[in-house]
Length: 160
Image (cartoon, rainbow, N blue to C red; front, top):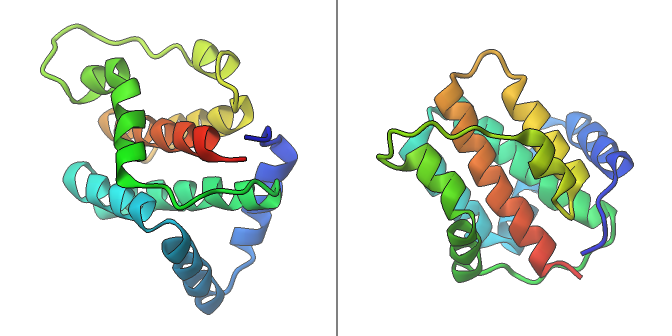
């Protein structure tokens, strides 16, 4: 996929922030029509692991990730649930650390995640938006970041 720049992300934030309530609903409906499995995955994961406010935060971030691919003129196919699950499985170490029963502490090295990722600007945004949110507990931050990374990985692998 084309590299998503900081400029793309800032333009996406500006556009979404400027939407009226009705425009936002239409915007979200377009997202849902274009990527129904992606939306279903995020909503299902949110309901299972996050409260309403945290789930809305995650969904808004995923909406932004999708929209910035449009700004960058990335062509995305309809992403299947199988593709999303494969991305989740490829992030198994991260998921086991967050969701597993393992008592070992997982140290999240954000520099490695950013520098080693082909969509480093999106990863940087996901890390900063999530972990600089003082209103969320650490467990919710970890879940939101893990799910965000899965979606960033999927968008990158599927986009042309």
